[in-house]
Amino acid sequence: MTDDSPALTDDPRRELAEFLRTRRTRLRPRDVGLEPGPRRRVAGLRREELALLAGVSSDYYQRMEQGRDVRPSEQVLDALARALNFSAEESRHLHSLAAAARTPARVPRPYVPEEVPPTTERLLRTMTSPALVVGRFLDVLAWSPLAGALLGEFTQRPREERNLLSLFLHPEADQTCPDRAATVAELIGMLRTQVAADPGNPRAVELVGELAVHSDEFAALWARHDVEEPIRGRMRINHPLVGELTLDWDAYPIPGTPGPVLVVCTAAENTPDAERLQLLAGLLGPAR
Image 1 (tube, rainbow, N blue to C red):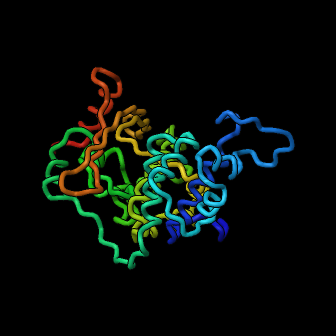
Image 2 (tube, one colour):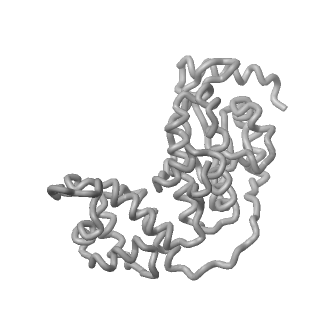
Image 3 (cartoon, rainbow, N blue to C red):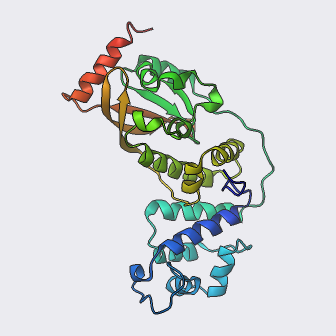
């Protein structure tokens, strides 16, 4: 891994600039009704083309991409989002980055670990489905007995190492998660979204820096500036005891704790997946 690996910058204006640049260079002229023209040296849109489409001066937009101290209005941000064909998630991310860039520099604060309410821990112990509490930056904070059986030795790691990205960011994970690459990309997009909502958070800075140093895959995907806000999805797991499982998952906010969510996995009824999940539950023995 080289020393110029992307990490979490302390300057929100730089984050905003890099996000706009990556999106501009991905958009082809024909995607927005422009003719590429001869002898074009760039694959994506030029800055002046995007500025024209958004109805802002090219000088103003150039200063945004340079990370200069500009404070775009909500109307300008909406115009840029339309010109760049942003999804709803990308538009929200753009506004979050711009809000952070307008906020005065924050005083560094100590890291306060996220906590799981005792009532939620009690709920997990009673749940018969795989369920886990995931923190804002993808730390696994607690889990139900059946989720523990799915996670395996991961539950024995020190607290600071129990992060969903660390679970999937190694070659061996391909054997237990057939869709590992797509899962990693989605998780990194989720992390990007949370970081934009709380730039400079000590846990985010620590996590992104560590992953960027130790994983080329993470570094490459982090540099793409993709964002995700999924609240449900599907995963495939190869478990050593019961074989392959296809599970649906849904995320539920925990009342009174902005950040951590309860992720619950289920299998469709009357399917081999449900039978295998029930078999795994039986291997756990009597409830403890």
